[in-house]
Length: 167
Image (cartoon, rainbow, N blue to C red):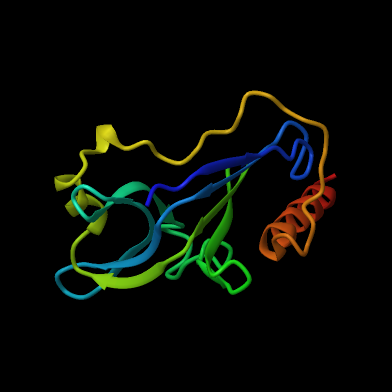
């Protein structure tokens, strides 16, 4: 099943000249990597697309979750069940970009190997498409309706309050 990509431009929603990008993948994996001694080393989100010819998931992109700052995932990056859409979404700030990724399936794993690296046997890193980039065109400010995506609206509001405190 091939999934689509859609881009939302929210020019001023998270600051002047900023944008939001929404993307759909087939599977989101929250992986907790542990070393040979069982010590937790890092958490990562791995985004997969289904490849019908090989009948396997191929890594589309991955993101490390706060490697030194937290032993557990940032609440905004942790995939959250969205029962209205029958799937999972995670939403976080990637620099000045508000990133929103949705998938119909999610899994959480604890491993002593890196699933992202193992998956290079199916699809080499240089052939991955990665997550969508911020579009070059900027639009006027749009608000994120709370009912459309409560998590995105909370993040946007939090970012706005943070900037107001700095002023």
